[in-house]
Structure formats: C-alpha cells, structure tokens
Image 1 (cartoon, rainbow over the protein chains, first blue to last red):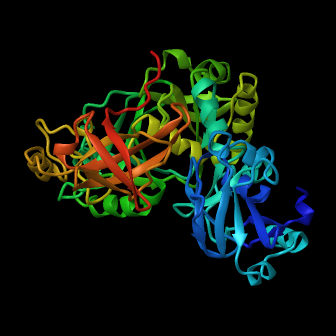
Image 2 (cartoon, each protein chain N blue to C red):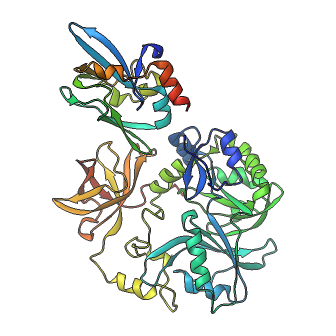
Image 3 (cartoon, rainbow over the protein chains, first blue to last red):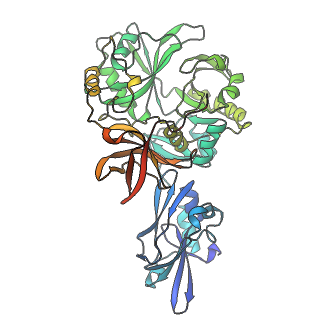
Length: 129
Length: 373
C-alpha cells in the first residue's frame, strides 16, 4: 500500500479502508516513523479475532528492548483478522510497515471515526514537529 | 521532541548530536540513549568494542592528611589499606544501613608511582546528595574535597577487543594494568587517568580526560576501534549490558530503603576491625532472614517483565521487578527483582504480572552473563 493513500491516527497507526460487501474493513498497522522511534522490537501481542475495540483505546501491545508500547485502535469495531505471521517476523514492521507489516483488520462500526484521522500530509506535518 | 532546556551537557554533546545520538534526559544531563539501535550497540560491545560517554558521572577528589581515615569512615569498604593504583567498588550508607550510593574509590597514583590522594566516581543522580553528605561528615577530618565533574569528562571502552585496540594509544602498558587498578597515563598524547574497570561485564577501561581535550581523544580511539567493528554506545545498551552482567543500578536495585545485605553486596562491605557509617545496622541486617533479597529472573515467554511488575509465588505476592529488559545476548527477557527469601532459590517457579496478565518465570542465578576468561 502506498503511504500517501493511507489515513493516520495521531498515535502513529495507519489505516487503509476497503469496502467489502456492505461493510468497511480497516486494515491497521504502525507507521515507519513509529517503528523507527520504537526501535529494537522484540515482541507483539496481537488482539484476539472477534475482539470488540474502541477508537483511541489500546488494542495491541508491542515490546521493544527498552519499553512496552500500546497500539491504539483507530476506529470502533470488531477485529476480523490478525497478521498471525507477524510475531515470528517482527522485522517486517520495519522492512515493509505498510504492507507485510500490517497488524489487524477491523470491521468499522462507526464511520465518524474515519473523519477524525489525518491524511498523509497532515500526519507528515505532525511527525516533523 | 523533548526539550533540552537546562540540561547539563557533557564534552561530547555536540559529537552525539552530529552522530545520530538520540538525546534524552538522564539525571539532569542530556545523554544519548542510542545511535543506531540498542541491539546493534550491545552486540558490538559483546563482540568487539563499545565506546561510552560516561562524563555525566560525578568525579570528586579527596586529598589532605586525613583523606584515608575520612573515606574509611564513609565507605563500607576499607580504604586505609588500599595500595597505589588500586580501585575498590564500595557503598556509601546512612546510619540505618540504607544505600546512599554505590561508588568506585580510586587510590590516585601519578605516572611516577607516587600516590596522590583518592578519587570517587559517584552516580550522576546522587552527586549533589553525596557531596553534601561528604561535607557534613568532614568536620573532624583535615581533608580537601574537589568536585572535578565539569573540568574532566570520562568515557569507557569496553569489549573483548578494547584492550588491544587502545593499548597502542596509551603510554602505560594496558595489558599489564590489572583489573580494578588505574594510573595516570598519556592517552593520544593527553594526560588522563586510565583504569581497568567498567559496567558491562566485558574487559576494558575507563578514562578520565580533561573536558576540553576529550572530544579529540574520543574520536581518535573511536576511529581506531571502528576497524574491528567498534562503535559508540548509548545508555540503552549500557543498561542491557549491565543487566546481563547482573550489576545493580542505583534507583533500581539500590536505594536508601535497600541495605547491602539484601542487595547481595556483602563483598562490598568490610566489617572486620573497623567502623563506618551504617556498620551497626548492616550487622543487624545480616541476621534478618525475613527481608527481601535481590535475584535474577528469567521469563519463559517473550513478554518482558519491567520495573515495578509484581512477582507472584503461588498465590502470594513475593516481590517486585526492579529492572527488566529483553536480553540481546540470550534472546529472551531477563530481570532483576527483590523477592522474599522463600521464593529466592534458583529454580523457584514464579509468575510475573505484566500489565494484568500472569506470565511464568523462574529464579536464576546472577549474573546472567559472564565473559569467557
């Protein structure tokens, strides 16, 4: 996925929205900027499929050598898939953060959440501050 | 991102900024937590040479006719019998036996072999506290104290190849400088104090150098070490290295509510035929088998037990983690903790509460890492 086409949360998650049937599915990952800031990632605790998540609330945890960090759900909804290969291939978070490094797919239940997300230009600006 | 207002700068501040150092606040100083990555810097130190700016640590000279007797009163280790060149790891305790700081005490020795007073290297975060403590207890002694933290900087070169790489640049013969000894020597032509000490579990040395000449000496030695894969190392890897080596860190494993006995630092306390501040309390703690003690913890999974995490033994709370990280050498999480004595034997199965979830762990002997001799 091209990072220019994605939406971003202030907390550094990226979101790609796709229509599947009548529902919107948000694929979620963390930005290259976040991966670079975290460095030396060693572990990810994926959410369970079926878990109900709430926008701006932690739904996943990632450990680096130095610290544990929360990953926040960018939207309300239900986790419908997780990247189960990721815990054993954590390096893809830095080598391909917007592709093979995706974390989870969430069935969006509240469209209004999407309007709150930043576009690429606005997110870039936030990272430069 | 973070503001560097009012933070103290080491002589290498500009160097760190120009070389990718990610600067963070540490004990009032702006220090590099890492350059390229903690794991990379950690491995460089374990396999070749790591170079560490440790100028933030406090350096105090103690001289005068009563210097030895004065320090002997303050330090848990004996000082009066220290030979020229000798260095001792020691604690400074209060009357209650609580640890005020852990320090290195140097029998400062000139290039001609003449002793010249004592030096103390203290933790950055404790410098003001220790200076006031030293001044308070100065009254009965004819001593002169001098804080040389700002006029001198300090750096460490650590790793299996550190000695051979540094030796050609240092006027004394490093290979014959024994572990825990030090002396005045020319380093890249600059008069410095060189010691065979460190905080990584590796061989190597620490060099006290005049602040204005330090960046030049540092660069020359870093260039020399880069030929074998040496590199600058930040505080992040300094922490993972010392944790693997089972070395306590003040503010984590050590503090004023912790005594040397429970910290497992009996080797740093000389009780025989001498008196020092805290002695009586420490003798009492030796008979107290109910206090928590410092242990090593290994996690079964990949989840890291961090500082403050509660440790459970069966359904009992057994203690808490004081430092935890992911060990780059062993590729699994390790931690140090204080636990009750009934849960302190190596092999004891425990659980650690990591953010509300219990994760299995066990007590293991310290240190986690010991270099090959």
